[in-house]
Image 1 (spheres, helix red, strand yellow):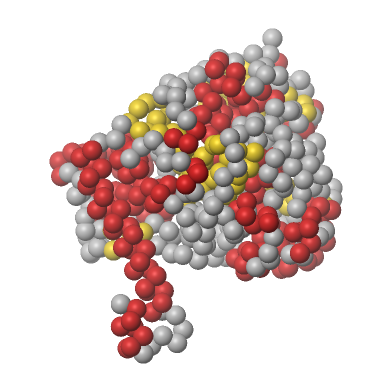
Image 2 (cartoon, rainbow, N blue to C red; image 1 turned 120 degrees about the vertical axis):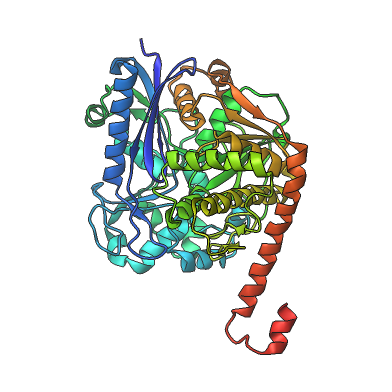
Length: 541
């Protein structure tokens, strides 16, 4: 009897595989690292063959850990970052790297090489832009594709299949060219309701009229709830499964986490307008679900059926959050390797200092954490961060102070984004939190206090993997709807209520964040070419 589900989540630096039964019980979870290459500033690349090998290794390890037999696995689901995999007409990798390394065929989601192309895309008037807050992001696929055509015409001429990473994984698993609505609507500009169709008119306006042929794009996207197919013999052997295993449409990783948290997480029932999801990781994604389309400046969406059938999804977020904390750890003399265990040890040490010194720990350090530009409420990949209040201290205590003030800034930035979301989205009272270091109680409490929301965090469950597994279960027909699947796959959530005392202290930190944003604008003005006269400088100040 097929009574198990496999979920694969491919993040920026690793592939994770989880095995669940049909009640949602997690039986195993295994992680395999993936490398990132940065041959030039703003260029970030990966090897899709390495990614697939990591997926296979993680799946086999999870099967071994759980003791689950391959013939009992009903379905497999894949979710991934919105990276871009470039292949030729025969499905072979095409090197997109400046170094011409054959394996580097994948442009990572956080690659910012296409800034000029993004500006060009946004200069063309078209209703499509309204679905993306008025501006496409450099993190999306259309600007990256235009960069490929403009800067690598030889490569473009050889292209025959270009995938969003989650669709590459389902293609690799089945051989099918079907593509998911989750990726095509939110990152490729397909029409927002499943099944969506490609934005032909807009593509022609920006010079990508041949994209359908070059990328092998289908005429419509695949809605949730319908299987892509079954594992091919080759992929079944590589994954350690059998050909009877059903493959679900791919999901954007944050959307898989949203599906898991909202469908199966146990918490008080509130209207959709009173709830938000925060998926933390290398970046942070804020996701809102609604029964009608919601759009606005600094938001991507709405997209219907991108995570949950018949519900609209709107996304916002931070371009770098976990990546920012990794950067802090890597640069500091006492930082070390920024693995998850190191981050947790730092947070444990900070908790002791907060207990002894109170909420002023880390001052006068103030941080503006936009080291990789911003997504929301302003979409600008050129914005930079600021750290103020530093001295010459290089001790371990200085690391703890800087790290904590960086965490505070990230949490206050989430509040800033929520405050600037469209009014129709509603003011959230509950924040469902998962991914990255979200399960550390110090951070969960910080986000509750900074946002003024009751925070709920999965107690003993990887919500992203469970959401992916739940999605696969519906696609395989184990449950007729997401709602019914969620009712059977429930998991407990830890509750972090708002602390009034700490929330009052954080009002100062919100003010500091806004002041640093103003100062950044002033500094940018003073640094502009031709601004040298004292009168201009005095007016700026």
